[in-house]
Length: 287
Image (cartoon, rainbow, N blue to C red; front, side):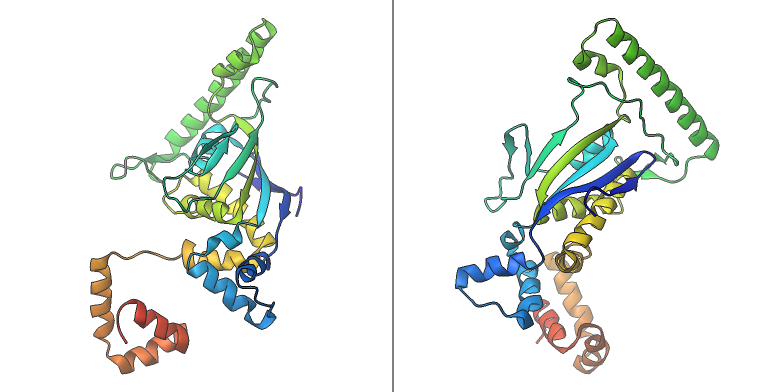
């Protein structure tokens, strides 16, 4: 899969450049602390335990570099994480245990001329009246087509002006100010598995902007290919998991208690299995 472009949007892609680490890496790192001997029969159980219980430092030896060709406005969404490194400046979370990181390198508009490549959406969404930062699929098709036509027209003239001022001696770093945020750029991002999963958790959310979600889906294909067992744990315990407040836990306990233990054993054991059912009941305070 290295150097294979996974198409995203109309002109973009994600592409695996390099990687290190395997699904077995967290296991050898975890066993280093206890000097335990390798045990293939226990590998899946140990890997699951590590991720479920937050021992994620062992997964940070799994690192990959991914190249993305994407519109500028999507890039600004993807790099809005508290644990990133930009041009040597590290921005870290206030949480002491946050050791995850990204290392990006981007095409520079100061040193090279941008190509005439702009993103034109197939579908234009309307403003959500309930969620100020959200969009909904209710915009009339006539308005969508008019917007896309106007955007294409605006891009053409912006790039025409950009080229003309470059020819007239304006520096690249100033001429680029004429270009718009749907311009395509390229960025290579190096990150460990844990921080990639942090990005995935945020950008695969149904409420995320569709374009950002499309790139997160492309990245997920790469992560699944490289580390299928670890990614499955991310899906099981993080991506599709939810948190409950104390009040919600009380309500859940009351709801489950209403079944009666016989009903619980019969209906839930088929879904979870005997051992996982026991753990589930312990979590909500039913024994």
